Length: 303
Image (cartoon, rainbow, N blue to C red; front, side, top):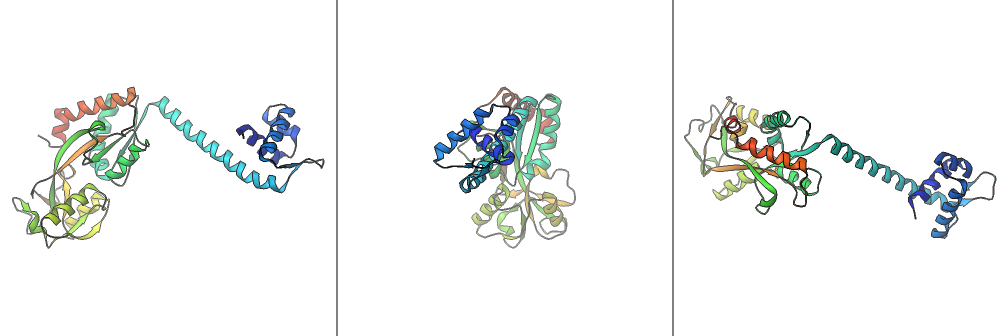
């Protein structure tokens, strides 16, 4: 079964005329007739009733038409998707996946610096729910790169450390721990936590540290919105734990160091089967220079 046979068959079903079909498709009428006969021979069924002056589909032909049209639609959808890839290749586009935490606090400066360095390469960002989903999309080839929190431990060949920061306790200004020099996790046993959703690095780390300290955290709300978490902490609705890079400019709540220390490594990640292009190497070179620069370290208070 060939694609052109399906194309001829679908067109005939619409026009009900072999001659008109040949004219529309810019082929000879014998070519159309031959293709349809070959299709019927392969299926061992008569699809078109030729006994009348105006052709019509047989019952078998009507059923086959449903499948043929679906195949044609799928082919056109595939062609549109492939055209997008061709357009992106011509335009020079890098697809970058990020979690909400990264998009809000790390991506804006990165995007600005990259556009200044490579104005001819488009950097398209795609926000996903968490770092785990970013990795999965990169592994499937849906992303060129992703910026993720934490490492899976078995992907050193296709990830690069961007920064290593601390996570700190966030409490309201009136909270008893607001002036503590550092806070042991054991002291959070009776607190109510406001966290990101369960698959996030923040949630998993907090849950692990709490259980290792002998208690299960009392989680009153999970939300992907970092601004919401901060505002609820300010409103004395609970405590949270956030990366320092997400809190340097905040003055509405208190940020206290944790004991034991909880760090947050941030990696640039790409799929293990990805073949790096020239443009990909340019992006990797940029990221290396950018994250090693004094300006980057000063901007995120890493020194």
